[in-house]
Image 1: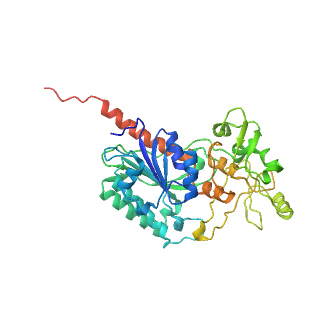
Image 2: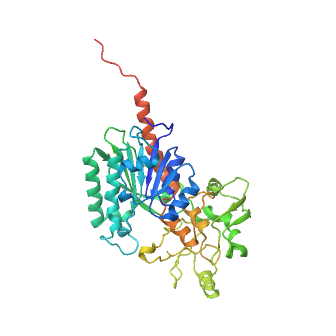
Image 3: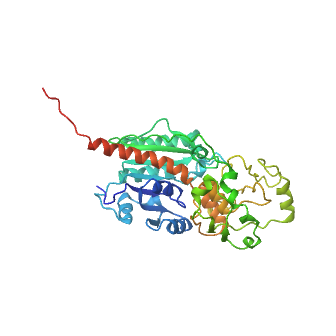
Length: 374
């Protein structure tokens, strides 16, 4: 049994911590998280001070080493291992590359699951994982897990973040796996109400008008009245806040004129940047490419009422990160961390279903059993 009163979790390929935030809110204890990117590890450590954030190549880690670094013994049962192994080569956005070496990290993820032997696992990935050669790799991964005594909830689903309270259209494959001796979890139900861009960032509009934020990342002052959505994400309830990630892009006058002339809900003709429509969810926020792929900046949406690209904080709001969450590094790093993350509200919906299965198992174990009496 675990020493912790909360179910234990391990986050692999943790990024900035979108999945961890969802599982933490569902009352899991994140024993340790691993990522190869030092900026991600710094950001994670900043926001999860009670969890060990470790820079490591997961493909070179054994289950024993993960336990050691997480401070767990062989007797500590891990309740869930979750993560989104990088599979950019299978993304439906841009050029797919079946031979991208990062695609093999899915098999490494399965290997670590088998070595750690958790009760449950969650795999998050791009929607392209269900198509073509990627689907064959997923099938290979699941065969290895089945041979080790694991099952998964079928059919595997592609979830859209906008159906789980996130003001963004973002489709991701979610695989819910369980050890054969455990109660199967269920996929979370869709929310009947969608959140719009206006509901997400309306109270931040005055932030973007501050000229001082052309050279500063931090805003201190009073925000406008919150919506039900933004109230959930605010650091404090009185609206008198200090926010990071608020640096505003300094655009040329020609770019400002083009952005101002762009109809909301359509792309700007030259840059192809999409201008957000205030009464719809945002399109998918993209991360751009890493240093190994040229460090290209992803197209950043244009603000719905101001002729500029959105800030990192506005992107974080559209991703359902709380205002207290800080992104380490430059604007490029901040947008990349947001774009690569799982929206915390969607992660929380998934984590809640794993928690429910664990609690159901506890309830069943408490019920007395009666032998047939003659």
